[in-house]
Image (cartoon, rainbow, N blue to C red; front, side, top):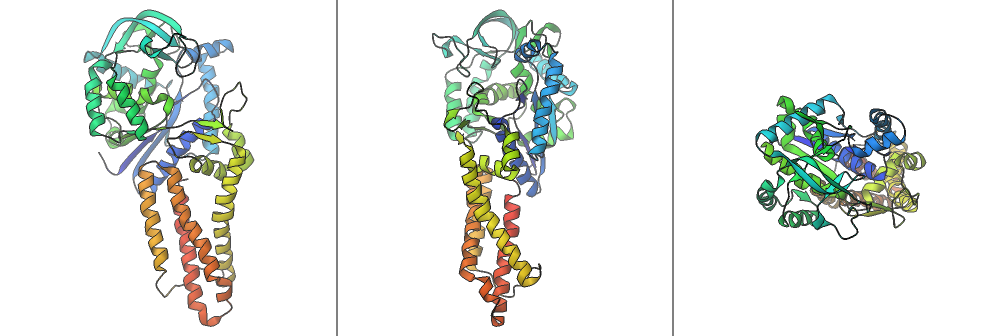
Length: 460
């Protein structure tokens, strides 16, 4: 791996609906990582995008009496508008309807087919249209409803192309055992290992009668299953079809952020496809939790879906981004409430961080005409030790994608500096000319702390 590169992805978002807090959460996390690794001087490639094929899109477009292309062209604007409003720094935006993606999908399909890992057979089982997911009977109960969304399943029996995932059960287990941080957090790693050990079956990867999808090369009455198509976007954006320098630079350093509901596709099917193609596996796949709203599951029927556009307009971008990253440990479920957002950001951003910067800059203008004073004596040993501790913890937590803990560590310096102001009382030092050097030292330390805090909080 090129240790100087960092490739970070969000899942490509399904465009059957407008973006909500879950989309904003994943994308904000990826943006934080991209900004952080750029600060480290690494070559960063940050990608998000939209998943635009499938039966669900086809049906939604028909219900509105428009073409699927017209539907996806309209919905993606909401995603792009939100990323601009959130100041997301993505380097690429991939749409699965783009020609570059079609070529990559064809190449990978033919590569796997040539190796004998794709074959034609007959699929019989249960299918969830909203989730675009096949479910074997051994994962269902008598109610025959989707384990993910709770909606009724449809019985399907048709000719299908299959990916021979079962061949890669042992190689996947071996890889997991030798890479304990491949899937994070640990609870998700254990969940996936248990699932693989229960036995993997070959996966149906095509549908008959689906007009809105990528045709199977050489057999266009079949369209590729939306998940097989969508996962390949991670190769499309690094120019896999051209075996380019971009691919060589970034592919070995790819990190995927996903919601816990799509972890199995990313940590079992996708690695299986990559192993079959002879490609290296991602460095890490991190599954974050879900947001509830005031203790309830978020749903349209309850009318409690959190619209990031509205939250940003009401409270501002800095407050919104800070709250969703600080309020809950990345990887766990969290609860969103406007009351919680106001209380958290008033305390952390206004009363602590904002107050520190405001007081420090005011004193710098008042006592030194806005200039940084010279500090001739050594700095505070306690401060130096704390700065080292904060930087070490920041590095550790950012490597673990532990954003809440990283912010908590940064705020130790914020709290120290606020206490330091009260302890040193620069307004008293300023009245005594004999203590001018001490004032210089105090203000230099405070200004230097604000400089470091600006750098440390920049990614967030």
